[in-house]
Length: 194
Image (cartoon, one colour):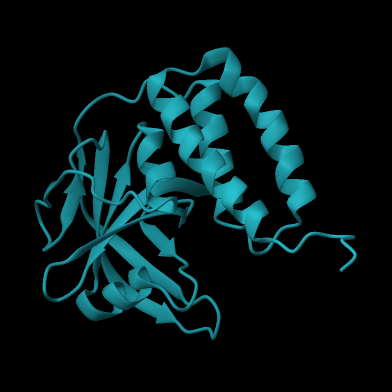
């Protein structure tokens, strides 16, 4: 199973790095696999300090914000490891790295939970929140997917957004759409004769 979370790692100087990431969770729930691409701050920090915090959050602005350069979210100290927790997290799990399966592109970092805490109830995602999460995943793959596919997905996701969005979801969506527009503007014009 893959859970969409916010992963916070920090380097040996205590500088936190916040990244949205799909985390693989074992069927028994006792192993968490983080698969960062090389190069990555998450990978470097986890290899350096051997710890990370998974944050379970329903404020989709954090997901969209991290992908659009807005990484200054309020943090608080973790409880059992030297790490940071999102202040808006509904729950968090503190992890220790136990094994690395190396790979040139995407190493597999196998972690175990050392502490989990619940802070507030999760009441579910509405369609707008789902739309923002899916759009954020598309934004993270702009360099891998054809623009036509991204645009078709965005057009479909916009339907749920327009029906159920609140202010937070609309703000997050606007950040993501600005990135898509900037990406489109950076592409060479097809079919233009010089």
